[in-house]
Length: 326
Image (tube, rainbow, N blue to C red; front, top):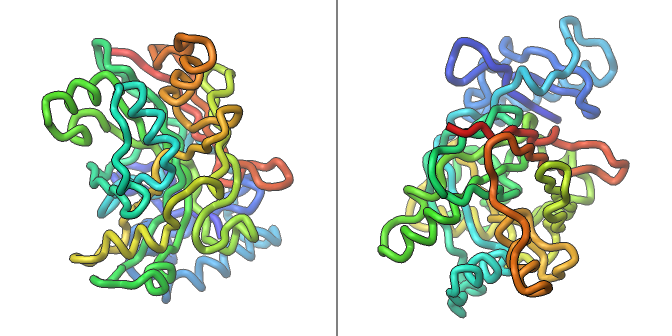
């Protein structure tokens, strides 16, 4: 099943059901008014949404309209939590190498997780760029959306609370991050301004063999101004799967329905594949040619982040944003 949120006059929008090929969508507000309402009572609501999804797939749903990503907000515009991790250590190694910092040895043994402000831009929203040399960078990630996870949930139980999956552009301000880290301040407070969600979130069963209950094993293809930045495979080079990350975050507190959790910037150790961010591309260029040539984002730049199924069709709808300066 594929779900989205139609932008309207409210902050949380209207829940929509989308067909598999991203060609038709229909309001589901008679079942649940918002995505959050569906997550709050998932076991009761999901079967009714599945029925509507089947009707849309068969072309039998009255009121279905053409799918238009520009009309959609993030699937979950205001989440009850936004937690990001560091499963792909090749990203951490490259990003830190640019700052002349090495990676602690224990990163491969225990996840490093960070909580953020949990308001998401829509997949086609403009990307605001503030003034000054901030070093704005994309970060392509896979994220899961949870229903209520109890305190102390083990990995098996944590896996049962993964209800939806999507892709995320978690913007980083590299210059701000480096300066803030030097001063010993919180880098997530200043250097992580606003994430973006793809237009659509999907249930795990929709992904077939690409989802093994741990990771989403497909490339995340990232372009800036039509130039490929990287296409790392989410199933490779990950130190932790999603159930481990969810269980880890629930060690001392419950995670409320509507929490979004990501495994960190996708990245592979193979330099020919690289990672889903400009910083890694710059480090690879520096290693291979002596100096980085790809610049960080500026006004007017076009971002495209997408994940395709085995037939070459977009699964979540592309994150397609224009950087707007000022």
